[in-house]
Image (cartoon, rainbow, N blue to C red; front, side):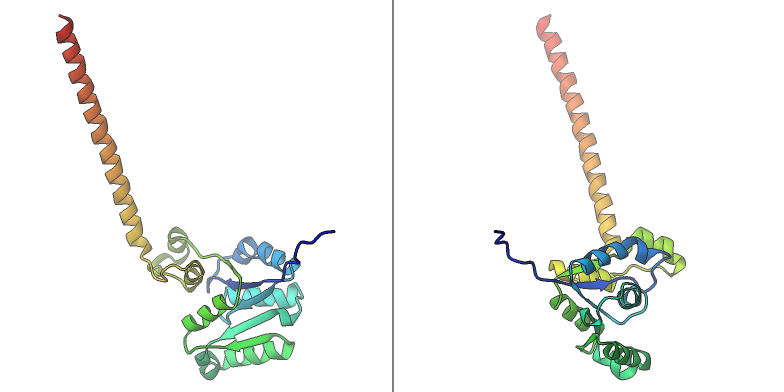
Length: 202
């Protein structure tokens, strides 16, 4: 008899870029979401454009997931001051999905989704991908999606990737220079040793 405890369904927090590139959802999200659906997991997400909307539409329309497995989180400001988001809130409730309104800022709202979920389904662009995608619009930043990952891992939410790249390059150069200096020193020592041996043999 199998006495293994039955694994309870978990909750996935879906987040991603506001401006995903073409096929971004299909490439980076769909398979992982389908796995979570098959496992019986529930889903939480924000109300933003881009990945939040794509994931919500996929779950409720294409994948036909039971609405009660989907919860959309709003900040208080969003439902008070944005008529479109207030209408979305009403639509989710009308379909039978869940709605949570928490905090005055999106940061507080996102922290609540991390708190109320078990794992993340997310991806954010690397610095190189951002530069290629945004072009002149690129500026160094830590996206809310990356903050979600860092929050889950217990890391500081803010980091300077450009500075880190410079520091890493400087460290690599220092190590390379150190190796070069060590190699030169070893060559010099070997030359001195050979000279001493020749003197001793005469």
